Image 1 (cartoon, rainbow, N blue to C red):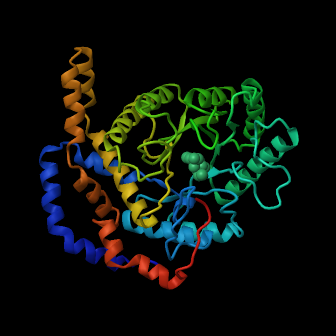
Image 2: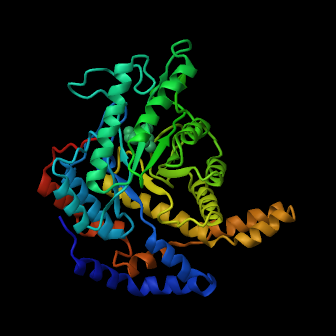
Length: 424
Ligand code: PSV
Ligand code: MN
């Protein structure tokens, strides 16, 4: 299914006057609204190929219908999202869930839909059919060299696919760790992992980045070999200038101050990428902004301030990716909500009067500092986000249009009810 330009125009026409009233109101008191709108237009968020189908929990999965059955259909789904919001112009692929059988054709399809290839992800957290050595006791950390070599080889293969598609980064997330005390020699596990990462790093093309993603727990519950930002930073620093830390919002211990982590990683020039999601208890993979939008806003405040301090381009300086699992909502609706939540938090962060905030800090005026942040957070920036969409040819209300056009119903007609997407 493809959305036609006239369908978006008709929808926008119907919403035009209400939108105009709202945007005029915001413009009347937000002096830099045009600057914010331009920034929003540039900002693109990569959609993970594994989140286009219904996810599940370890207790089961309640399949949706009309899910993408192939990589081509996944890219088409992202094309739909991108025509609705013009902010999802990238995809992050997971290998081997999404091995491109015909890279040229996939590249052409993506280009036609204005979709770029963000980081490619390796997978040594599952055993694949016919695989010689098992990852049950880890991959790069494994006590057995042949298992480690197999994991390295897989990552090199992922780089190869990424090169064919025009990606320029690889995300390595390792489930390596231990479930019980005594199981692992932490130092040896670290050294083996570093050695493997060094070999993968050595195979990176010059203009590529490697993102080392950390996670506090799961599937291992006693120790994780890349368990927190400190360990990830240690690996990334030892690896070299092309290696960075990737922050996945769900990968921290409860109540971690993620905004502070973001600030310090940026200060060190070692923040490389982001996985957006939200959580209440652990790595819940819920829609970003659905549980704790204030935290998301505080993180964006640090991102904007820290990136500006290093003269980084907001849109291209980091890899912006969603990493969520949609168990009870339509994945496409959930992704539209995710992108909207990210854009809102970004717009609110752009609204913060950084000079005034710094002045309040210098005066130790804690109450004023809080006021400055909350004035921005409590501003309804949705008209600015909608205006950015309008100017880039997208829909004023993407979710509403998705429903009015009965996109999912069309996809079910095309693909059937018994479809299973690869991945989460
Ligand atoms: C692991 O929980 C993770 O966050 C990594 O990014 C994986 O690549 C992704 O989820 C999908 O399993
Ligand atoms: Mn992740």
